[in-house]
Image (cartoon, rainbow, N blue to C red):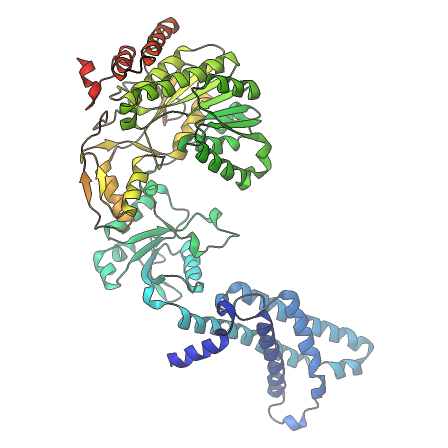
Length: 637
C-alpha cells in the first residue's frame, strides 16, 4: 500500500521543483472540482428521473465562471498543499460563499426585470446550494488528503525523536499544529504534560494529556522511549520554568522551549523558534524593576557617553539607553572589530533604525588623553557610563602595568575630563573583586573606586559593583560552551569553588538605576542571591548539551583567584535603598588630597614598569589587598 501511495505522490510532486505544485495546477484542479460538483448537484436534484429534467446543460458555464473569479480574488490556489491549514479553509469558505451569494443575489435582481432570462441563465436555488456545499467540502478534503499523502511519503520518520510537550494550553496546541505541518520536523509527539488537573486525561488530536506525577517519571520516559521535552508555556513564571527544566534534565531528556507570545512572527509559531535551554534560564532570577521615571529623567534628551561600548556590559547599557531617547549616544571602544559588529547591530535594530542620527561610534583608548579630550570637546556628554576596563584576573596578574594604566589611570582621565566639561553624572562599573581584593585586577578597580569617590562637586560620581555576569565575554559560561563543543574536557579550577551570578540585563538595569538614584559618592551593590558551585554549573551545562560522556576535571586555582567570593550585600556592610535589590555599600571615604598623593606615587612607580614596585604601591593604597596564590604574595609580609 505504501508503495502505491509513494508512486502517487511521486507522480503528483516528483516532477516539480522542491516537490511543489505550480499554482495553475491547483487552480485547474479546483475548477475541475467546481464543474464536477455542478454535475453531481444536478444529478442529486433529478436523481429519480434525469430524462425528465428541464435543465439545459448548455447553461453549465455561468457557475464555473463566477467561482473562477472568486478563486482569483481570494487566491485559494496561492499556497503549498502540504502546509494546508485553517487559513486555507478560511479562503475556500470565503471564496465559495462569495460566489454563492453573488449568484443568488444576481438571480434575484435579474428576475425582477426578466424572469425568463433568470430561468435561462441560472439553475434552481437548491442546485446552487448543493453545488456550494459539495465544492467547498471536496476542495478542503482534497487539500488535507494531499497534505497527509505528502507527509506519509516524504517525512523521514527514521530520524524523528519521541517528544513530550509540557503545556497543553494555547502554546502547546499551537506547537503541535506547527510540528504537524512541518514535513522537516524531527519531533514525534507522544504525549502532553500539564499541571492543570482539568486537562489531565483529555486529548488533543488523539494525543493524551498526563499529569507531571505520571509523565515526569523514569518509568513513563522508558515506556514511551521519550528523547525530548519541549516546554510550551510562554507565560510561565521563571521559578516554575526552572523547576520543569530541572525535572527534564534529571530524566536525561533533551530540553527545549518556545518563546513568549510576543516573539512569535505575525502571531504564528515556527519550528525554527523552538530553542535550546540556556544556562541563564536556570541561574537567572527576576530582573530588577527599574524606576523608569527616574531613568527617563536622567537620560531623556541628554548626550550620553558609554566607554567600553563593544563589551558585554557596555553594549547592553547602550541598548537600554537608546530606549530612553537620548539626544546623542556616543559609543566608545578601542576594539575595532567588536565595535564594527556592534555598529552594524545597532544600525539594523528595528527599534533604532529611525535613530541613527542619534548614535555615534568612536574608536579610541580611554588612556589616550589627546583623543579623549577631543571626544569630550566634540560631544560634551552630560552622562557618562564608564565600562571600559581590563577584567581577566590571570592576565592582569601577568600584566600589572597595563591593568593599572587602563583601570586606574584610564578611569582617572575620563573622570577628570568629566569634571572639566561639566558632566552631570559619572557612573563607573566596578566588580565584586574590588571587595578585599586578592588580585591585581580587583585592586585596580578598588583604586578607581577610591579616586572617583573622592571627586565630588558639580559632577556626581556613582559606582556600581557587579558579581560575575552570565554569558559575558571571557566568562566561565562561554568557556564551558566552547569546551563542550570541542568534545571536552570541561575544566574547573577547584571542585569547591563558588561564585555569585547575575544576567547581563540585570547588571545593566543596576547601572541605569544607580545612575538615577545616586547623589554622588555612592557605591551601590546588588543582592546577588544564592551562590553557585562552578562544578554544578559545569554539570548542568553538560546535561543541557546532552553530552554526559564529557569529563569535568580540576586544574587548580589560578594566580589571584579566590575559592569563595565575598558576599556583596549584607546587613553589616550595606544600607537599604528604595530598590530592595540594590544596597548602598558602607566603605571608607578618602580625602581628595590624600588620594591625589597616593595616585601620584602610583604613577611614579608605573613609569618604572616594575610589577613588584607597582603592586607594592597598590597595597599601600588598598591595605586590604592580599595577593592569593601569586608572585606578589611576598609583598604581604
